[in-house]
Length: 152
Image (cartoon, rainbow, N blue to C red; front, side, top):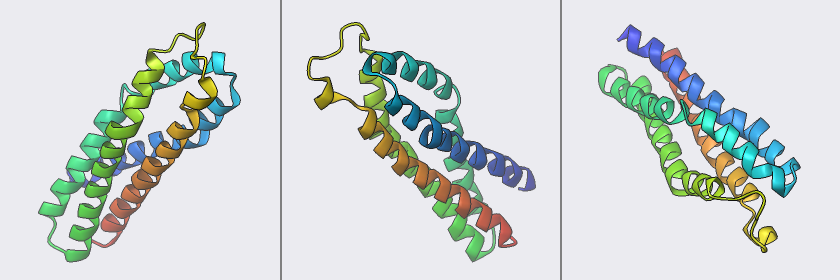
């Protein structure tokens, strides 16, 4: 179990940290770009983050849920369960909001953007939903840390 706890500390930290990158760097950067520069940079960032974030978050959820079933103390059990459920909420937000936005941006032609760009510009919507999932992910990592600190 000690190995699972250690691995989950790393996974939870990587997951929350990866989400923070989007919140503190990605969203502000894309909002500062011209509409023509946005899609290529978005593709660049998403192409790199999608290499590890989905598996990191799924593994964080599963590992925390497994720990909730393995520990003997109630505070740790409840906190691991909360962390697992919060990471599942991150997955839910990602699949219902972020993934569709990313897919739409992937299909954009920067040389021929929609005439109604001001209406369909996804950057603020992406930022807002990313902040929701970042908050959930950071709270999950905090719950995980509190579970470990509770003495298992």
